[in-house]
Amino acid sequence: MGSFAEKVIGKELPYKTMYGLEGLPFSNEVTITMYGNPEDLAVHYALIGDQYMVRIRGNSECLFDGYMDKWEYFSEHSETISGSDWNDHVVSVETEAIVEFEIMATYDPASGELGGATLKVLNEIEDDIYQ
Image 1 (cartoon, one colour):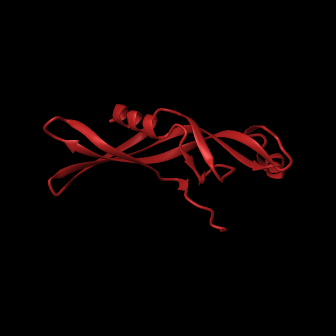
Image 2 (cartoon, rainbow, N blue to C red):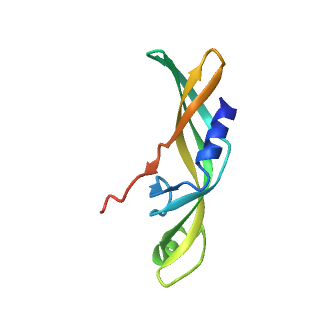
């Protein structure tokens, strides 16, 4: 399962853009630029109708790019993130965070193969609650 999970996150996570991720000090269009090997995998199987489904949960340490206000960068987080590309109000920053993911796939017992995989980031912030 580890190699299958690595293949799926390797296809889905690089350069994935989202509003934010729980635990990141910035939000509003963050991008995953690098990912680590999947860890702490938990695998569950289920027979739904005549189809076998597999759910794989785990996490991966990823490198994120995004932007944050200059005042916040200097006041709270400058020791944990690196920044560049300055302008009057924001700075481009990068930092590492853990992505918790869930992969749903189908299993074919005849061939022993997994397919039809979809990936969901469990700790993704999907939109701005202040809008």
